[in-house]
Length: 215
Picture 1 (cartoon, rainbow, N blue to C red):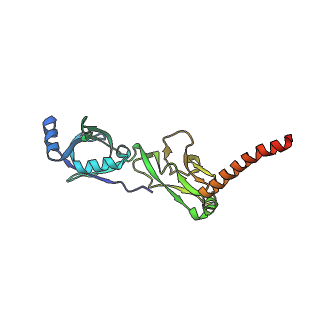
Picture 2: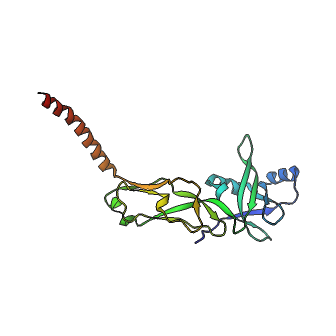
Picture 3: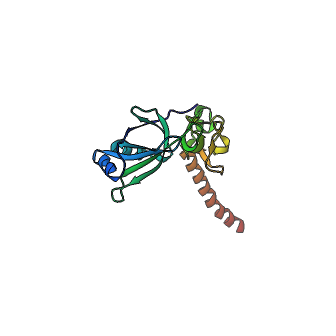
């Protein structure tokens, strides 16, 4: 099931060149260009505050957007570059690439964990430690999965979930070749403390037993 693609609103920008770009910035916009696909490059501008907010949310460069420009058909785009002011580190220009539905792209997909109530380790007080709440996958632009589902049923304390344990959506592949960890079920803190105390007790008893043996 394809996830909902977030909208990115922009305006068509009249005029090109440094003069038009400076005017856009004075008006509170970030100038940019949309290129690729079978259409000609298009000059656009995005409200500065809108773009800055999306940049602060993270992973802007790996998020597929539905670009909406008034009077034009929506198009799927992915950012291929954000130029920033060298002093203020604020966006000054943006490049967006048009994508076909068959295009392959790398995107971070959210991981959802289910059936916690059926995990013996969690019933014992174990803690689900999530190492990767999102996983970067190479997917087709027209068939982006909404999420990756990890089933915790039957997992006990000490069990580790790696990418090879997960059934990925058809056509999706992780961008990392190795079998990396997604999450694990660790022992509850009370159990860890008891184990530590036991270890310390055994360590203290050993010298005493050795001394007794020598006598």
